[in-house]
Length: 425
Image (cartoon, rainbow, N blue to C red; front, side, top):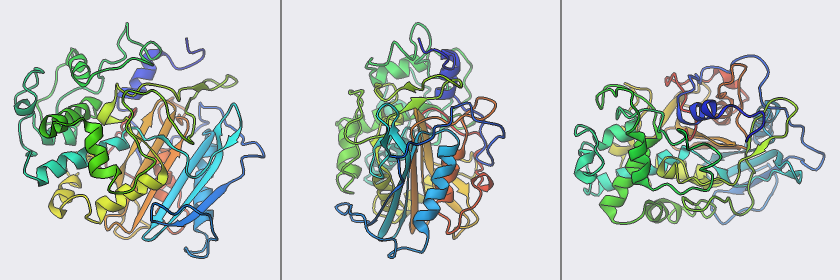
């Protein structure tokens, strides 16, 4: 059992369903997660480096705008003060990246968080999956308006469902993917391996009526599990191979991996913790099989690699301009194709694009200016809950605020997507 933890049903709702969280503000009241005070050993760490992947030596802040590291530290402290044991935060400006860490990575050993610590990025994975699908579109091997049953005929899917509907989260498939429906629980599937087809068949057992594809937005991990299956059908390779071949290796993302079979986070990393009631020990969720998320949220990465990925995307290295434009078409549903916008008045153009993710014990987000000149990424090793027990948008708002040249109130940064996806979001 998980003593004092949210009920398993409540946990499933937070993981799988929209938490009705607006990126327009943080609800008032104290967080339900306990506030962790870093020990003296957990002093802030700063790395300022050229953007080339091979560089990692710490140096002075003189090469970057004055106070940039200080700004990041002040923003990261907002997340630590709200209850996260540790936070890693980075901002990339063209040829330079500033990465900082606050708090602790491991509550058992009191190891200080380090700027290069890895963490589970949850549904930031979806942006990567969408890029691979769109690369196949650019190559003429797949069409955004292809019917999914053309590629996956044996799953019992709606014949009207298209590839675009999957990436746009308008498939009609429900948020509750039925993965944690009894007798399956958070605890007894920790080490269980789910195949892609099994996940889709479980999702289709949801008895709720489904809207017609293309008519309504509903965030569901099943959409991106299916997108991964389409990648595998078209390429005849596992999705992990295509992610590595098309994104991780060409961009030098050496600390990024897609471990759907292994439950472990390797290398230097933040340990993940679920928030408990006040006075109880946090529940360590670091070791957990991510096969239940696969191409919807299984990637492990770092702030450096995440900013590298978004810079490549928004500077035209990964997709033709016409397809990047389609990724950013969020006018109807507030969500594009694996990306969503956040209004950030203090950056050129007043809007940034990216994604966020919250998977057991980890909360993260990554955003870029549309011109690709600035990127920011954040990873925290717990969920932040508001007074109503919902996932707080603070972590994502801090990542967006890191793109400013001042320190705005993160709660002033708004998204037209009125419901924040939770779980691998």
